[in-house]
Length: 339
Ligand code: DAH
Picture: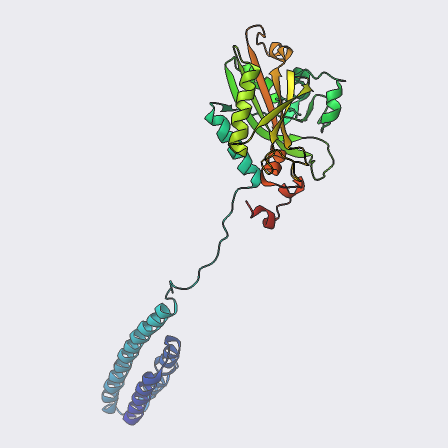
């Protein structure tokens, strides 16, 4: 029996010398020291030994078991260390490896132009005003001196929620909302989305952006309007930009003018961009109609004002030489990446 015990010890020690991982080590432990293991098996055979032999064998068996347990524990610690070291080596970060590329976003061309416009007007002391896109007919038309059946309504057909509520066709209703609440001096711009039931084509979209400007105070004149427009045009289109006012009609201003800016591509000589005109139309403007002031509770014999309304898409198209408005809304990265 002693030989058997020694043989088992030798066998286990030999196996421990070659074991590769903790899982195999545990298998060895179960195979020899487990409940049904080889060593346990031998101990069970002790019953057949004589009374003198039994304690001697028992002692040897216990020594072998202890020794093997200690060796297995030592091997386990060594294997655990080895496995940890290998894991660390495997997981080492190579800081020189190329990283994952995250493309950087950029501003949409319309946002770029809106930001520039905002900056110019804020620089002249204007405040930003806001109004709802779902608007009352009263603010969008009626209070702007466009009663029901007025032909100006035909050019601004929109989407009606009901008889009294519609999607605003212009940012001009914000003028009314501001004048109702605030008494002069008033100096605001409003930037926002407007709606019209227009067919989509290269120069039309049922949703587009406008910027509205409004100044009301004592003694505001057409000269103030022209000066403001000149500053605006130079800021957006360069120092050499000139403006030209053409008489026009808007129901809520009197007198009214459409405003052109000199073509910055040809300097006014005429080219493809300005369709040989030398000028490009960018906005509508005028002196606030006395009736409109009155509707808002502002005395037109004391106060006067001017207003401007600008199409942002049209301005951005002119600014960046873009020939199709649809490009703004298609979200094609090949287009958007150019700004
Ligand atoms: N709201 C007008 C439009 O959409 C543009 C406009 C013209 C606004 C003259 C104004 C203005 O404030 O004075 O066609």
